[in-house]
Length: 225
Image 1 (tube, helix red, strand yellow):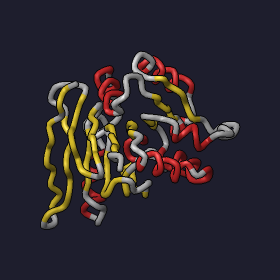
Image 2 (cartoon, rainbow, N blue to C red):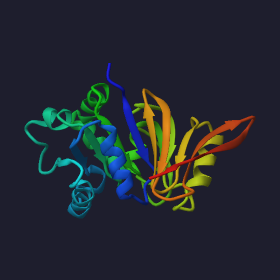
Image 3 (cartoon, rainbow, N blue to C red):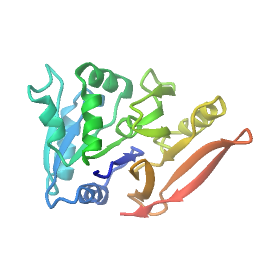
């Protein structure tokens, strides 16, 4: 059975080293990479950035849902080595995916050994639950795809309210999980954390949970790319 690899990224920063890292995880010399920009309403500037970042590393294509999904939606998703989900509104993205069955196709992709990754919304979406601003400027909790157990909070060092809101949710019964600073990726293989990588020296991820009624953070230093 193929390894099931997911790399949630904290958002707020990206770098060439992280792009190379993701491409190399596929084991392919020039992997096929699908960019999914649903969360940003398929903003063309964001798509161009991905072509610029990955164009020298992979054969990049994109999945768009407007005015409608591609006729060969299944092969568009599953004939890939790497799928990268961009940031934006997580709730809107998941709603569109579910209408068209892309959530189930992504699960097939994961089971088939395709590397799944993404930043911010594209990092939250793989978990049971995430901390999101999908419903307005205030932050809150939302249910996600459940490919990874627990919860995830991106933007841990570049948005002031993320940490206190996450801590409050945890004290109210939110499942423990992980938080990531800007430009930090967490590689999970078969549901277990394998490695933490980052775009700058000193970057960190955190294992965050409640113990004896108190929120506890365990920092995990990222390997600089």
